[in-house]
Amino acid sequence: MAAEVVEPPNENVAEIRNSAFIPLGMNFIKELALELMPETEKDGLNDFMRMVRLLFHFEYLDERDKLKRNFDLVTAAQEQNDALVALTESQLSPQEFQDLSVDFVTDFCGLMADANFSLLTQNEWELAKAENFMFNLPIEIAWEKFDKELLGALLRQNPALSAGLTQFAESALLFKRGNGVAKASGMFITEKIDMLLEMLLMEPLLAFIGKPKPIIADINQGLPSRKPKGDPTKLGADGAMAQERHDVSVVERRTLRRLLPSAFSVLRNFFANHELQEPTFKEVVILYRMAKPTEGCKPGPGGAGALVLKSFRDIPMADMEMIFPEINIRVRFRDMLINVSLAVVALVTFAWTLLTGVEWTKEIITLITVLFGKVAQSAAALMAAQTRYAGAMARAIQSKSDNSQVGMLMHLMASMEDQECKEMILAFCVLSWNGKSMTLKEIDTKCETLLWKRFGLRVDFDVEGAVVKLLRDGLVEQRAGVLYTATPLPQALQRLDTKWDNLFTYTDDGGAAKGAELVMREGDARKTRFQTVEQSLSETLAKTDAERAAVVGKLKAQQDEIAEKIKTLEGAMGSYKWRTG
Image 1 (spheres, one colour):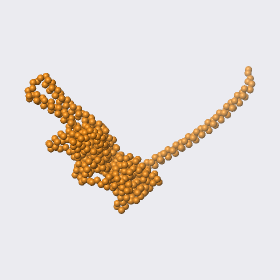
Image 2 (image 1 turned 90 degrees about the vertical axis):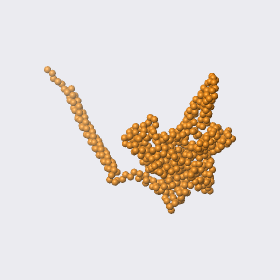
Image 3 (image 1 turned 30 degrees about the horizontal axis):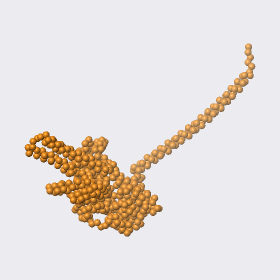
């Protein structure tokens, strides 16, 4: 469960229901798990953790591939992927493209739920609109630029999903996970001036015309109040956190408007320093589709605009509206008041000159010219202020931006895998370490206490999800209906090893497996025949060489014998006396 805000009776104190998300890398959980196990079982536990992670990865491989494929198809036009654009245009009608987009968003919502994200509620959105923390620029979201067909179809197909969601849920979905605290300090002189003008002028005017501005939002409106039962960080005699408080954190909300609720308090503390504090969402993800394609990009089938995924970090709850795209920035009330007042003075002076019949002397003409120059200067100042605010907003958003599009999708899939595996490993090790059967509540409390004592983390551990997956793999056994015990580690390793061996079940069933074996046998036979022929040929060549060497040797001996006879004959002929005449 992601961070959810519940207001106790004190309107300046918020109970933040902690997220089930464990904001630690896998190595930290592995180290904690190894600390719980005896030395003789640590090697086995390392193998256990590796197999759990690898098996989980393979089990969700097809789902991840489907999610990635659908995302590539629905974003092909905006990413200018010509190959996929041609594919979608040739094979998908506008209705089929819409169905594919809805299918992707449905799977994406499932991914976010598995990764312990939750959707922003209407009450939390009312808080963001009513109050400001450090982001106090006057803005308006251009909802008409958002597509409503995609998310509208999703909510119609999943009516349970829309319960409690924001009024703009058909335009954009906001997911949040984890919580923290943002702090700021200073005198905030500019902000105090704006507050004074709003308190003394704008708010009375809005109330007079029947459109009062909400000041302090009650985020728990319509929900039963929860009375605090004690310090959520308090440990009992056994070192465990108080059970009724382990899933929440208490944060005092100190915005400037809460600290200085009246004009008198603002004046009295005008030069005082203040420490501001506001709960934050650690991670925020926004999903939306534009009504029209962006300039320079092809539309999807049916003229669909760009589908956008963006993530942000450490967003104060009162400043949630800062992350939206397509925002129209208005001029501050202070700037508007100053510049409009100058323009009114100029116009009144000019009208007074006309009505009273004052002689148009050089001085009067100069004065009127100066006043009209002031009017033009005021208009230019308003436009400059608007540009300045746009730059300030861009810098604020840039500082909070984290990731987007396919990079963020891959990060979320990896995060979901890690989160599920961390929960399974921690629950199994707690059960093994305990040495006896435990209830779900006892497992939950023990895991949360370990994370608090070891890392200082307040986590609402998802014990049900972890135990269900352990039961499915035979790593935990259920006894007496409500008790659970860990399977002994050697037996657990055997079960994981068997499951790993059976991921691909190719057997001698007379089918593809047998055919593959025959092919291998034929290949081996050909290899053997080749080796036999090669050896025979080699032996034949060796024998032929030996016979040839013998013939050559015999011929050489005969040649030597003939040479010897010729030499003897030449000697005999040299001593013979020839007769002449």
